[in-house]
Amino acid sequence: MKKFDVIIIGGGFLGLSTAYHLSKAGVKTLVLDKGDLGGGTSAACSGRAQVCEGHLDPLNLMLIKEGLKRHETLEEELEMSYEWHRFGLFLIIRTEELWRRWQERSEILTKSGIPTEVVDRAALQRAEPAMNTEGLLGAAYSVEGLLNPLLFTRAYARAAERYGAEICSHAEVIGMEVQNGQVTTVRTAKETYAAGAVAVMAGAWTPVVTRLAGVEVPVRHTHAEALVTEPLPPVIHNTIELSDFYETIHGKQQAVAIGFGPEPNGTLVITEAVTMTDRLHQGVSHWGLSNIAVEMIRLFPFLAKTRVVRSWGRPTSFTPDEEPIISWAPQVRNLFIATSMVETITAVPLVSEWMALMMRRETPPVDMDRYSLARFAGGWSWH
Image (cartoon, rainbow, N blue to C red; front, side, top):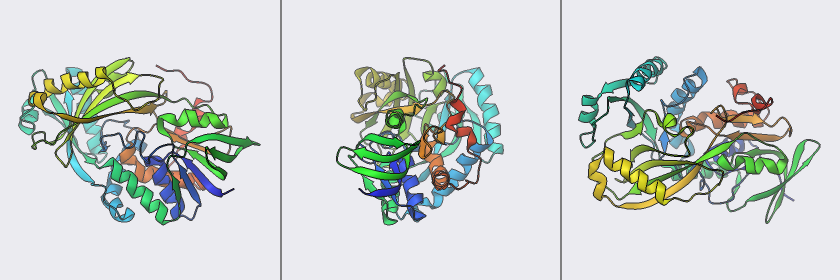
């Protein structure tokens, strides 16, 4: 039986980036994923390194600012391009309440080193001449990052392997043996591995995996659908999103929160139709795609005759307080859990380093207690 210091379950952004830092530090590391690497939520995303839509607490603001800075040199460190570039973002504002809120948020973000401003409808129209701005007050503007999620996944995987990590795709974990409060072995359909520690970084599938070790985590998910168009002339010049994305989808069984992301090859990634569901899958629905189409034509009428070349669906995990879980499990001493981040792409370069330190029983440079699973020890409720 092969033994590893750390077995990571989940081959997405979090799992592969943490494997890179662990293996670089000399930790014998194995990554197991039930499908293709990055084949879950990581690959099925628009590749945005978000900057201004999350929490405004000091730790999150630092993660955004420093995470963007790390991306500027990370391709060189990983020895592979993942098509990183900075790109403008407009968050559409449709009400006076949102206008006031984003003026306040913009001031906080700018003072924290993340330049953000609120612009009126005329300025938005000048920046995006093809947009139907009727009924809009304006938008919040900032500059975020964009990357190719498939290449980002591959860059971390190759770098981890260079330092000795073993990575196995199509290796679904079907069992864990727990003795005296510790995971001793991890079992797939073909192999059983001895583990010094186990990290579950499986996104929306995290609760399914932790139950194999007898651990319940308060994680649910929404199902998001998106589509990709044929290559187009450069008519949309910035990423376009709703400034009230989370309010638009919160508490609703189904909702469309429209967004547009131009890709370097000319295609548009258009997001997203969101459904509350307990079913984990990566399919798309007639409801989702048809309603995305209605909203996209309303905002950019010229898209009415554009062909859609592919579509995708993905589950997106969240916790009751909408903060991530990054923590050792209190019940199983060597089981580490990381899931439900918000600005994942932005934060990964830093958070993966800190998680690797935690898994080596070292202290990260910032206090991570706010993300501890122990905060739910007294129970939780879903709003």
